[in-house]
Amino acid sequence: MRAVREHIVAERPPLTLRSYRRLVTLATPFAQLLLADRLRRGKEHPARVGERRGETQTKRPAGALIWAHGASVGEMLALTPLLEHVRAKGFNVLLTSGTLTSARLAERRLPPGVIHQFVPFDAPRFIARFLGHWRPNLALFAEQELWPNLIMESAARAIPLILVNGRLSEQSFMRWRYARATFAALLSRFDLCLAQSTVHARRYCELGAPRVTVTGNLKLDVPAPAVNPQTLSAMQASLGHRPIIAASSTHPGEEGMVIDAHRRLRRTFPGLVTLIAPRHPERGTDIAGLAEAAGLSAVLRSRGHLPDRHTEIYVADTIGELGLLYRLSPMVFIGGSLVRHGGQNPVEAVKIGTAVLHGPHVSNFAEIYQALDAQHGAEQVTDVNSLTVRLGTWLTDPAACKAAREAAYKTIEPLGGALARTLAALEPYLMQMRLEHG
Image (tube, rainbow, N blue to C red; front, side, top):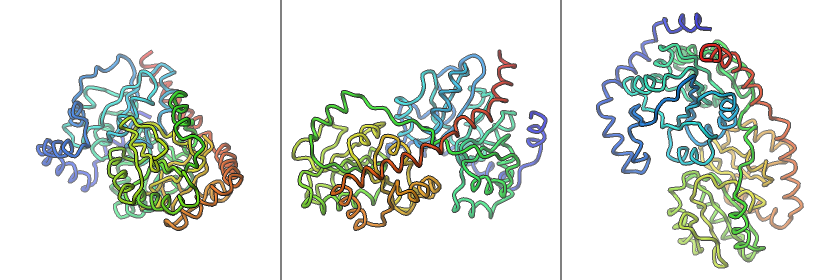
């Protein structure tokens, strides 16, 4: 493996990658201005901005270190069970991500001993500083995170790179084909590409990935999110026996439709409560404003309020509480799907036993939703009218809602196994690290 890696690294990158490196190097002095702007907009952690420049106050632990990178919340959650197994084998683990939401969730969900850092900006100087400090022995990149300098600098240091849970949407694939030589140069730096399905594997192969294996989707092996029993009891007591619907991981444009659906349904279902958990919790105030503009009473969970008898829209603008939301509502609309985002992961809701609705834009989880829809374990809606009708149908007919929940669980349960297959693919690299580091 080492000989192959050294041969690949010796190949000269194409002109596009060399030009990209020069442009980023020239722009690096302006990184401080970018960071200042992101701080003003609440997109960076004030005490951790140095991590974006590859700086850290955290010491590197002694021994072999595995570095895993996932862009945001979804990738981080998919990696978590894998990192838990690797950590249990005695390896040090560093996880990087790029969003504030993922960093906050890392505090709650990461296995003990796993270090979290923000990924540095894709500038050679920052990446060299990051790699010089952490000196990873193995790097795992989740899904389709292909930052050119991050990959090229890592490969230049002979760090084995593995793409795990790899996926490539049809849109990205068609776009990348126009720069095939560029992406082939990046993909050739990877020792392995572990793809979610044969469709994604074929796309990686066509773009020049030399070693591709189908291991399945790690997101199907994510366990049901936990919940604090006292918190759940308090919410259940506050809500009583009122009818409940929910929307999770929503994006701008979707909350308005959910609120409109609630407004239409409230006449038929007195006491109706709608729980909304936005993908980005900092948007909670805006969502409450939408509800109030529609003449509805809204409450923000981040302010410590429980719903009372007047509450109609309860905005769960907090981190890591989807397990609570899914246990409170028998049905949920999963966002990022009525707008052109690509959808969000329905597996956690299914494993808890919540009936799922989604929009047509689910390319990020196409295979999962296709399987669920085919077995009537999920239902597609296209606009506020169909969303209202489907929610109303399930509120009227709890048996139909229960049948959808059961069909979903029976569909998802046999599709697991990606975690075991991914660990098997990683085992030769883990064995090599054991031999080298004891």
